[in-house]
Length: 337
Image 1 (tube, rainbow, N blue to C red):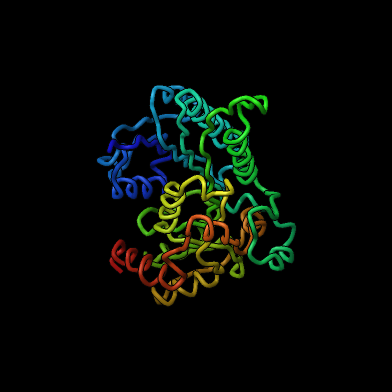
Image 2 (image 1 turned 135 degrees about the horizontal axis):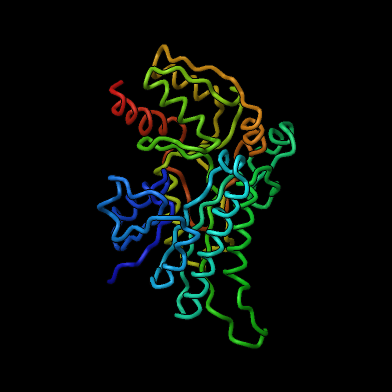
């Protein structure tokens, strides 16, 4: 059986590195990566080819590739996107649309649907107030789709673009044979935490930042209130979900966008776990109004019943397994603590 040709954009990021490793471990793929940066040592030997540069300007080069699957991870994340909104729109929307057009073109021309995997985010939601956030509880995919950030708006719009290119692009008269469409699948991720890569530019990164600082014996001032609560997930579960939804047959999927969840905890609970693991850790709370406002607009948790019912999703790591079996053992090794 021949290898499937896969493109992973944003391959040098936290999710990208873990995904490339996951694909290589699973086998059966020839992996092409793309990023602004050169590939780090963690994935350098696993990629057949690396295309370095601004994705928006590199997309045209990918028309010569016969991709079976595209994992589009490249993005300008929430905190950075609020500072540079136009650049975020260019990266997040124009880059996504360019790849969707490529996948749609190849799907129809070669009569073979290209699978397009898109990591969306809980940033696609928007809660009007803390009271609404608390009252809402676990939010479903079609609720509270009123994001408060450029990043969230970009993600929600790109979900809609994916639906368009996979259902309606090139639409013909009802009596005509429909074109072969690309196969778009999106997952709305919660805050993701990796034990192997350092967080960068994400608004949910206060959780892992607390733990990394405590493990290093460094004081840390958290930029949100200690009662701030959102959903989090171990990186291995994020990669598991991407591989699971990729392998699911199209007939099983009645939707294009799916929530996934693992555990929801407060910033104070992150602090308590850090102090328990590393006695003497100095963790304080000095909320930044801008970043606090972003996190307050996200739901406390999400309802992932669709993913569980349609493609068998279930996380391996609940909150205790996350800390005790995954994260804390690895950062103890990392910092000799």
